[in-house]
Length: 131
Image 1 (cartoon, rainbow, N blue to C red):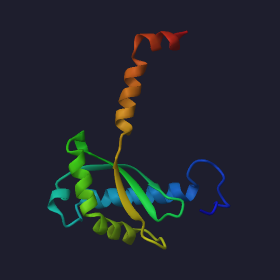
Image 2 (image 1 turned 90 degrees about the horizontal axis):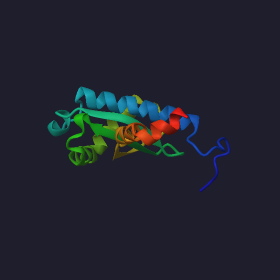
Image 3 (image 1 turned 135 degrees about the vertical axis):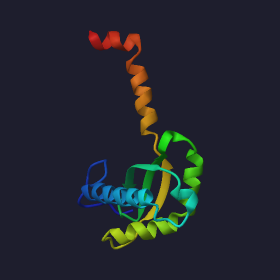
């Protein structure tokens, strides 16, 4: 794979971050409005926490979580089933050369935040922080 001449850091480029955020907003709007022709998907409230794009912007991974955290596997199946329609709707809103291939994964950010909070609430950790 060719090295990107304009980006030497280990993280995503500014363009990847910007396009990821645009895709996240568009996907959230489509899911919120219920524009998809699948009634099973339209009845759910889905949070799109983040979208990460590949360096060539052809693959976008959306990190999603259903409201309340219930039925996570069902949400992933429904989104995968409607991936083509979602891709078409999102690409209409964006001015990109290629419509990115959408992939969906569960957003585990909230679980990690809860684990961190639990860890910081432990007496031994509090004692170390106070010193």
